[in-house]
Image 1 (cartoon, one colour):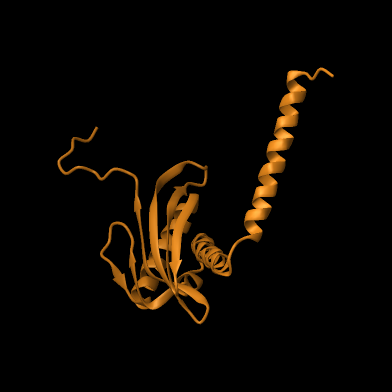
Image 2 (cartoon, rainbow, N blue to C red):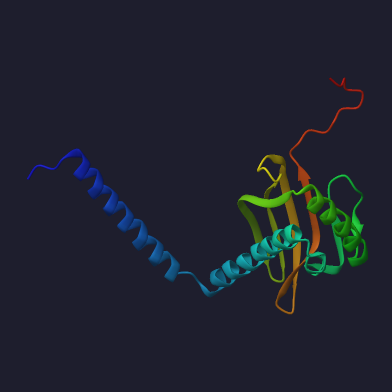
Length: 174
């Protein structure tokens, strides 16, 4: 029986996918209890970041501030660090309103990273800010440190910064 090149490639693809699927299933079932708990914790941390973006874009400042511990520190770009719920709320009231008025949307991009040790975790990743027309206005990186209290993760430190260049002092304007 003579097989065409296309038939051989299809057969190889099926065998490869079968092997990958079998390996994934075997690997998934061989996770230890600690590894499963770690994966669950990481998922929960990433969900906090997703909630942050959803609440920010919908203008839900109360829900946004509730993601932070009462004495958390927020370190947004272009301002001094903000400590505590009152300062964080004041920042987000102004920033979220400005973003809504401008019609911009905050989006997490790429694949986030992070880790958990006990009741402490960190997450880092990338973001973009887009205009109504889909034009990317800004992109950058974020890093947060979170603490779990009574089963719920809250930010204790949160910062992000732009990949955009910083205007040079004395630079010629065109």
